[in-house]
Length: 115
Image (cartoon, rainbow, N blue to C red):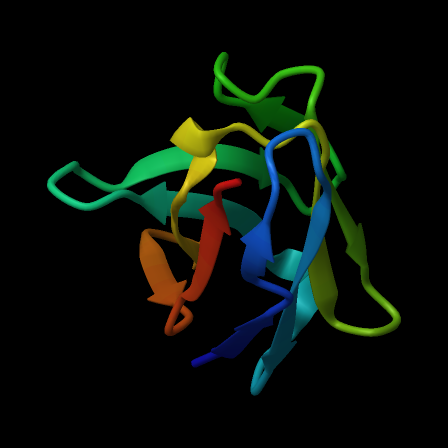
């Protein structure tokens, strides 16, 4: 079992930046593939970025070059640095932890990009 708590969401103007954090507890953080997903109103949840236990990353095409996922194993935390935000990035962002077909989710944090 792992518990995930996201933070860092909020309201930002187009072109602005936010950094999301996800603190994990309850298990061995380093073994998990960590991910950020998002869900906009009326849409399905989609993968934004993912980082493996070996720090290999992959990104959705829509955020490549703007978002960066990273992890600090000493702090049991994964981050999502979001730059040059666009209105279409508005969504609830969820942190996930995956290992051996087990998936865990945080409660989500709202990101709103609007002028």
